[in-house]
Image (cartoon, rainbow, N blue to C red; front, side, top):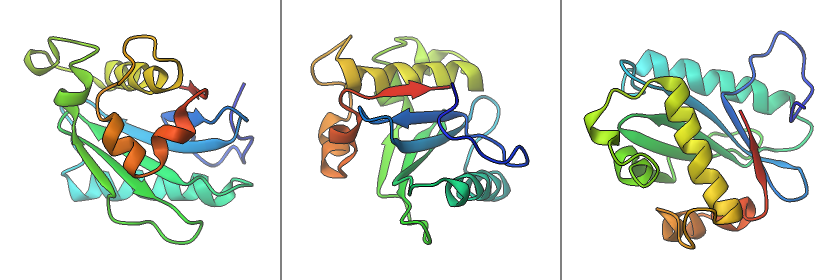
Length: 154
């Protein structure tokens, strides 16, 4: 099942999070080893892909996330404008809760996506902890509440 049925010419995001009503609330792109979003062209291309996807969606997708092995960047999208990052988290600090050897391994894109999905699912179902990493920060931007009871699609 695909979250949004769009024109085949638009690349789907690497990750989609939906709220408990099935509304898309977050889309994301991932860059694992050896790539990073610190490269301006890589970041720009990822943002443009996510904007293209967001603009064709029937509803506004309020959050966009870029994840690499260094940082998790979360942005707001209002349907026209893409904000500066509203939250920047250290990826190792967050995802080492799900992969204790995160800092000592090469983490490729697919595994990075899987670990982020585990983190997101922890907000939805608290399968690993009652307070997943960065719960306070996610609540402050209004994303935690929207993830609770929701689900993800990779």
